[in-house]
Image (tube, rainbow, N blue to C red; front, side, top):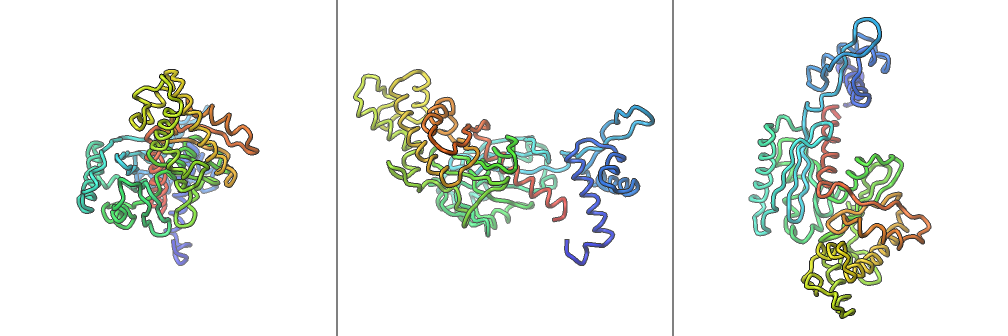
Length: 392
């Protein structure tokens, strides 16, 4: 809203409507009389604004109030199905996408295999659009129902211009296709892009009910490594969007991603197996043949060698977390990703290794599995959608 229009009758009506809409969203079902008391607006002003909100589909009447005397008042509530948003996780090997209503509830979800790296940029963009349009078709919707779309990108996303760099290896070469300006041209709705781990951190922070004054570090460990930091309820992106790019942090044993990723865990397993020269070594743990998942499964079955590998791995992970926490001192650290999700085997080991920290964060594991990035994308898509509704 520009300054010249700020005091016009139309602008005042819009402000009143948004004040009432915000009150209904925050307070749940309320009557017109309730809204008049809470906002200080006159009953005619409330009635006119509510009529406009109902006409726009943003508010609906729902039932009657349980007042003790007199005529029971009609209740009003936010129509969460007035519009929808799309959240997508453009992963290294898989695209996860979800359709959510304006309350953030997922209505439809699907996964697609990421196309081969030899696919040209136009064909890749067509594939992405077709996937999104398939999502809408399966839900019985079209683009007119969508207010915004958000994409989680597995690389550095510059908050100033949406340029993409340092993509994960399987997607290298698709930086241009995934930058904000190009994605925005593909879709008939506002588009937002963000680093994928930042979105996972936002989802964990928002959906776990953390207090706005607290800080959270989401540490994703899988085929690669990355961090997302939330401070005071906001994503901290750092210079050029580079905050949380932990891969190049140097530990005593080497570069963090080389040591803690799935490949690093397998190398550690190979080294320990060779050193111990024990009959407990199985083909699952021999050299580089065993996967990280197999190592965790063996540890769960009581394999002593697998447990010793995880002991050594957690010492390295604790070293990394200790160094990171010494700098940013987060209230909470949440582990995610294919390795980080194994909380039953990692958390008690990390608690023991980090016991001497002067300021020890609360440790936990994301409970949202492979949907954490999608859920974060939905959160920022909703923010964009509400800005559009409010005319901001």
